[in-house]
Image (tube, rainbow, N blue to C red; front, side, top):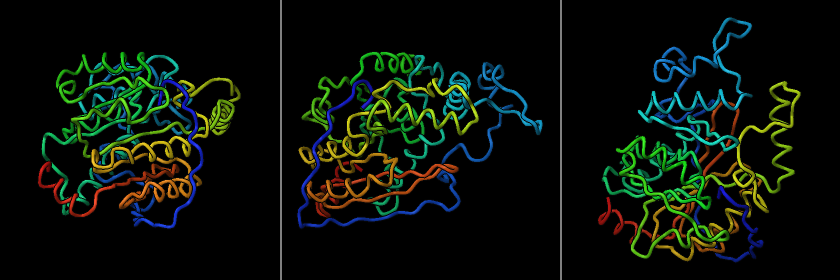
Length: 334
């Protein structure tokens, strides 16, 4: 969760009981989700109409095509600000210097695949009820998932983070977008070692939870990852950062330890959320995640493959609800 590194949760012992798993394949060719608004090449002329500040970062390449320098954090932030305004009508979006700047198309994909996940539990129909509730763990200063989810599907969000400064910036974005502010509640996680505890209240139920956990296992690993990005872009100055506070990028044990702790905590509130979900960047993390799900005795889990261009990722979803409980949930909430 952005804001402060978390202690790694110890490795889990194996149990004999197995749980059903489902692998859902994406569209071939590394394409975005079909409902994603950001298909194809960026239309910079249109984006400049949405946010004129983007024009200052455009330059022509060797083929005369306009684009931005993706190694420039300010240019990437300007592009994402223009995308949010053009596609979702979100104004006043900004993040503090050195905070993680989320790529909007990829973030939107997670939201759309979550909508499909809900549809798969609702006879193929995405629930349309206005009261559908989602929980974003580690929303960060950008608040990107609640902004997109509330805009696209009118979901209600609780957006939690451990960093007060990140929540203050998210609140400034909501203040500039009062219609979305009615759908998004910001909540401070008061404990550095908790994920759902202190965030999920006794009288709350969520149709889904989502999380983009810290990727790296150490500060050294995070810096090496940044260096590789610079080298891939042909840049010599590897001391600069692509963006992201240390705790947005790493925690002890990396994403696997974080997700294992998340699974363990979710077992304490098994009927308070229909689908618990998280992004998983490393395929090598999956065996440890599946072992944790087995020990937690989830009723079912799914792995949903995602890809944007050359980047391959996936989300893992799990539920403790059996078919009878799922049917009751649909009847009461959807």
